[in-house]
Length: 415
Image 1 (cartoon, one colour):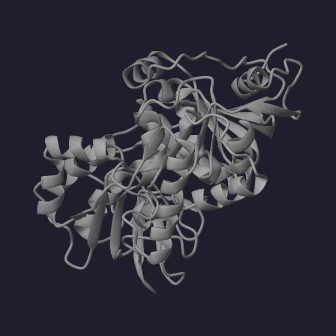
Image 2 (cartoon, helix red, strand yellow; image 1 turned 60 degrees about the horizontal axis):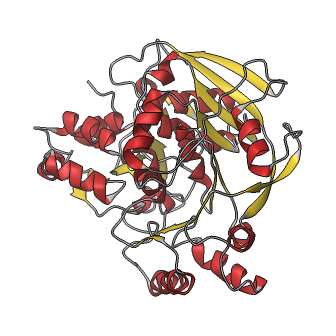
């Protein structure tokens, strides 16, 4: 029989080698992540179960990233709850307010390797499939079960494999590719399916770009996002982790596999328009004045994104009536940006550079927009009220489009 990556990983993790797509299995968890926003409910639910100790204190990762530093008494209390839990349980992998965004921290600090089953109380946990793992978001009460038993049930998903081919034009990036795919598939086009990203375009992408693709699989309903493991993956894993791992690939004749061919040779820069991620248009068709530009998030806050933006901003000034917020995805990314002089470029252009965190992405912290304001963001969601006022508008783009638009004060093609 032939199987997909997801089938193979979950068959191994559950020990049920008769299972296939559509079957329900109880899988062993390799990494469990929760953060400052969703963690307190996980802890409270865990305490209600009555289990005294977590199943494995070395496999739980707790980063603070959503509301850091604490911006209210409630968020400060959430931090206290989680720090107490970390100390009581002896959690070995705790990252306080100075580390960065959870989906950057996990691979950067070596917690993700191929073939693992990774769960997180955050819908964009699917990011980690860029390294060949089965990674997915779960609820806080489900996480309590994981804390207690180290296992969770899954329905093995069918797979949409996006065979992406063609050389990308100048100033066209992975963000444009995934926005275009979501626009074609629709918000429910891959509901509860594993979204695999393959083809020569993906092979030519670095790990950062593959993370962008996998990060947004959830925006078309995907259960997880996955990229094939190759030498780039292995090199990244060797650099960041000392964990052992097993590589799985997809058999192209697997019954549960649907291959979707996409040629991106003529793709233009894309933008997702309010108020849905699948409302995608070429940037050339969108002429909108903007009040704020947000460069950052678990989608496009990595060093490569900062470099792309700085290249455009260097020697230019942000438009008079536009503000720009730059938030590196992690402390390490921030330090690299400092060493490379990127922070200086942003500051001289007139941007506000903030400490590593989720920022305005979730609408709960730094840089919210008010009624009637328009934000152009490199993040992954633009739902009504996502970044502040429900009377505001959020557009999504690549880092290059964001930088070019900050200079003109309107959504603009980078040149």
